[in-house]
Length: 87
Image 1 (tube, rainbow, N blue to C red):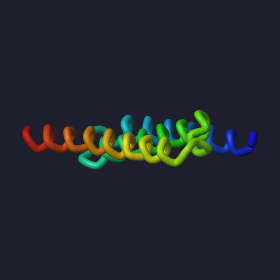
Image 2 (spheres, rainbow, N blue to C red; image 1 turned 120 degrees about the vertical axis):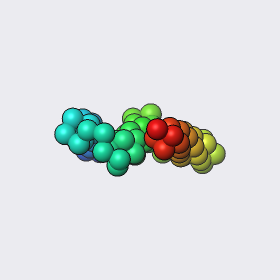
Image 3 (tube, rainbow, N blue to C red; image 1 turned 90 degrees about the vertical axis):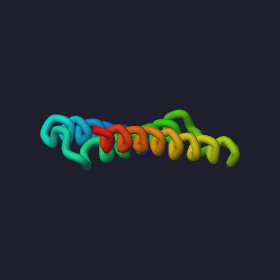
């Protein structure tokens, strides 16, 4: 159990550093923001599943969480692309 937590923590650290690097070095490239949003969604999912132990909860709670991640990420991405295309 402790080993899994360390692997997840290191993955979260790598994802954070990757998102930071993308933001710093790729600037406002068309694909940068959506990629960073996907990294953020993956990080939120990892935290909820592994550190908040949602993976051991009843199926309905896990389905609600998975839907929340998909809907919130999709909504932010949709708003980003709609405002990006408006300018």
